[in-house]
Length: 169
View 1 (tube, one colour):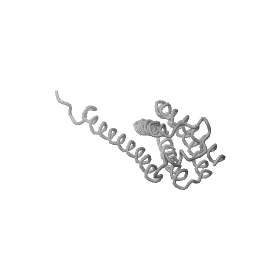
View 2: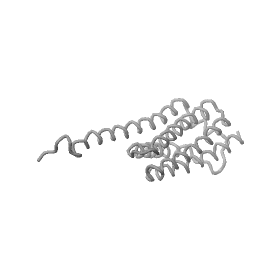
View 3: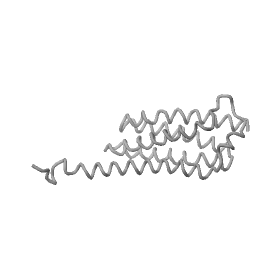
View 4: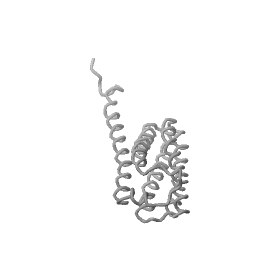
């Protein structure tokens, strides 16, 4: 017997479609931040190469692949939170939006404006926002928090690098 409109199966397709569209939207948003940062900075690679860097600084070519993976993980983490109903979802998504906005600000501050001190302030706030996002997301879906763990580690490392670059340049 075919499913009727009142059966759970009948409502699954629109919900699945909406969920898929939400994931695509979050991916587009995250990779849009990456693209905007790339446009705003021009030739970040040569700027980075010209800086007096500590010995523990990564090679410039590493940033693109790392951020490509991280932005995908950030989007999926946000998506997992959107899929769970409950009172914790809204604060987790608000924190997710704040961290993404702070993330978007850092690249133009550091590379385009060459404001290393302001960029450090931004990345310190970003680090706090990622911690808050992970903690709030853990209350909704632990997988989302785990997906944010590599991002948290990378932003912590990047904050230390930003500080070192600010102090030596």
